[in-house]
Length: 87
Length: 413
Image 1 (cartoon, chains in turn purple, brown):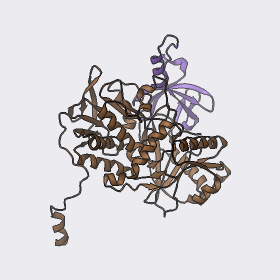
Image 2 (image 1 turned 90 degrees about the vertical axis):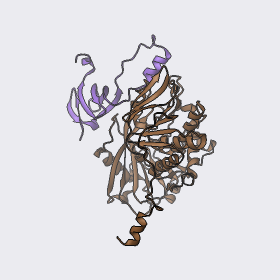
Image 3 (image 1 turned 60 degrees about the vertical axis):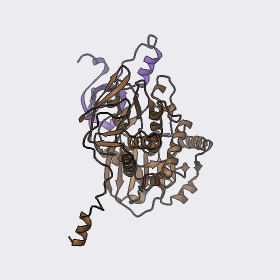
């Protein structure tokens, strides 16, 4: 069984989680051009490698971030959004 | 070994059959370089040589022919999609499949079965009616049928699904078919080679050189090739190739798993699909039940199989066909699906001159093999997008002009 560490509830089976997509900072909607906005809405960084993703723990309703290596399917780190940028 | 047999084996009149010659080295220059030796890339090479006289073509395959999505799909061919753009494309593909065995001089085991998409709720029955009307309007043989009709065509089915999700009706598409997917790739590959195309297996593309916004060369693990035209037909590996030329796409890659049972005597004549139960099943000409489910729930670039998948799939299979309880699974595998937000492919020219794309084939790529090859070959030969390809251009996303194909296999209704 594959496990994922929820920052609040600890290690839980992956079936308890929903994937929320790649973490992408939103550009200022008023200041961006249509092309920049379309790029934000549609385009993704689909190449394999380590990146930040949104995950959701269904049982307790916790949204958090996970550093996921999509080439090896290994989760390197999970943390709450508040801790983003704190290393 | 008896002398008579040995003499036959050594006779030069009967050489060992060889589907593809293996060229020793890459030429320094090709008119067209196709990245990806799957069905789509090989079909494109074939139509380039046959219809447009462009024969100085190299197909580069990092593994072996058909190693990717081509050999990992569940080999279903159909055209009962939901958008006029999608129906036009897939219906042309079904037409091309009809005489493809003759065309390629190889038995593709193309077998017309009839394709049922089961509806377990009013909402999905409504979508089926919508699809049937779009299909009929566009001349595709497709209709909504009731429970008795399904039972008559497939007496083994439990229409009540163990009272969990009773079937209310289905979308029935008589031209729905299955084919040997390896044979499609091999047939196209051999026919392309006979017309002068070179297939280089074990050749990995490591970079693409551009000058300004024009492609000039392709770097591989076996040397650099000069070319002014590159087609990327690598499905689940597309983001790696597009990042070489700095092109952004909406493609995300999810594994899609499938499995087969041990061979059984023929009993299932039709293709049975249930989006609500996340299962599609058909019986191959070898007797195995070929089954697939929905995408894996998160992005991974790996073709590993999971127990979760077989557990879920086997459960749903037994809801439809309870008598299969003692049938054994033979193998399971996964392929990489390059998904797009509107469940439609990305095809045609890009803003980089000489870089063409044939991607975003997610869960609907095999059935489109002939049409994508033919239209992409036309696009390469004429330097502009074929009419069937235009709705699927990459720039549709920045123009907010998406296709919205809800008839795709991975869409729940």
